[in-house]
Image (cartoon, rainbow, N blue to C red):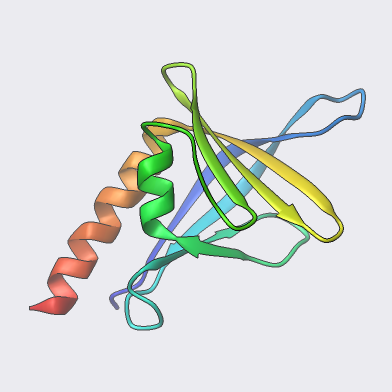
Length: 114
């Protein structure tokens, strides 16, 4: 199996009194389906699909393409913001989880291309 699937805990940032709510997130990469895209699965909603390169660049500096914005938040957090017709979803990750996921995607992509 060449697909990568990694579970992570993230914080869903809301404007409610809860503020930040911890949620389980599924990070997916399938180079056979699209070698340039990653998927983020949030509970109770559709997967968000965007460029793997955007996630990589957003670990280092603010970046955006279309409705997806990614930026570092302090030294150990990364924020991914999804702008959609029905509103904005803001998810805060530990950067280490995203780095681990991206390393696995590169190893998988290299193995598939051989």
